[in-house]
Image 1 (cartoon, rainbow over the protein chains, first blue to last red):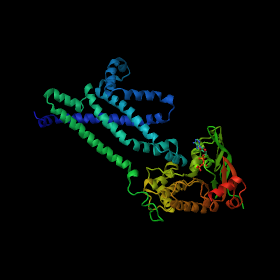
Image 2: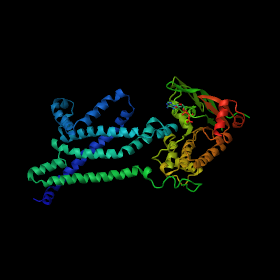
Image 3: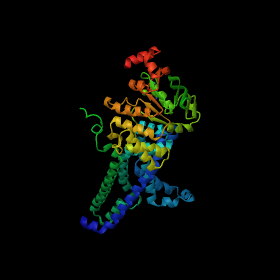
Image 4: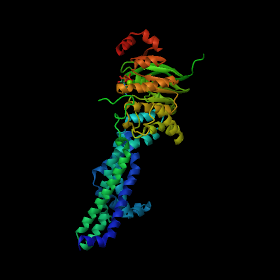
Length: 244
Length: 252
Ligand SMILES: Nc1ncnc2c1ncn2[C@@H]1O[C@H](COP(=O)(O)OP(=O)(O)OP(=O)(O)O)[C@@H](O)[C@H]1O
Ligand SMILES: [Mg+2]
């Protein structure tokens, strides 16, 4: 079979795999995105002792391969099946998709937390002071000044993290999740035709490209205040001609 | 004639940073329509004192009363922390570096306080903000971001932002010091018009012209204490202390 025929025959499965990859990646990133702001705040504000467990968690995630983390959850949960059954958690862990999702969400949470922490720490102190000076409460300041800035600063790095997660999600195929890579391996084992891997690569590439495009679009909107047209000096002086 | 009511009162404010005692017991009272200029050489504690008034800096001890609401501080601990946000919303503040929110337009900067702190309806706050920006001469710059504005324009937005809260008094910390010389005038003009309409203002400044001509009272700080205090004409005509005499001869 030539590559075109492969695609012709197997495109529904590949499409199915692509949807699974998208689901796994974006659900994982989303869960992490919901949890990380709170954790990042703890990393910035809490006392060192209170942060200790969080730092341990982040170090663990950053210092071990994501495949190991996935196996730990997938095979680890099998080991503890009786206990998990007792707590009614086995139905969750029985599904490899859930295990993969949990692993990726935990992984991405650690990275996103660190990225956001950096963003929060770079928020201009002056602007926080201005918010205090008009009587804003702490939580208002977080919502109106700190996080809007922190996300703008962290935005490119967060996009990178999502792309890394998307590529790492191929590992889910190892625990029998039928994502792009899972489907591809399945097709290959039937056809022994190498070209299906090329199609898989192309799918990953397309997803990445589309995502980058969207992310940049959002970035442009978020940084309007920096790239807005008009230089300060040119329009600055109502009374005088601009000076050299 | 009855005396105008007291708007703000600071009593025996002390502030130390570690072992460094920066404020050594300062008391000051601002009555309605007062324009008080605070002078003093660099490091004398002017900014620190001003920031103690709205608790951006927590005094080590002392008492601040704004509009009858008082906060007593002992050993660096304010006794009624809950009043701090309230007092802040009653005192406008204008900073040396403008401190505008860079991700918001001029209009959004001015609307922020009324909408977020005073919970005014959006439309109402917008009308008010537009009027205020017009008043400081920026009606054609309302939708620009701070990065698109000159220093003088940014400072005028910052003044409009403070006014939008309808404060009982406005604190200024060297509002023209970060500006190019040719932009100082436009900001001083706005401040002068505020004084003329009877706003209560406390202004840390190096602009002797403003202190002499606009303010109703001058306070001279030296090493964390008030060295001299009084109406500007008298003070500048015959300084009582040697330090103040030296100070005015230097800035002249
Ligand atoms: N956060 C701080 N930590 C430690 N020391 C401080 C702090 N803020 C101010 N100081 C010190 O307090 C003293 C008074 O500072 P302050 O800023 O009040 O002076 P100033 O009169 O406003 O001077 P300038 O005219 O230069 O603005 C200075 O010696 C300064 O170094
Ligand atoms: Mg100062």
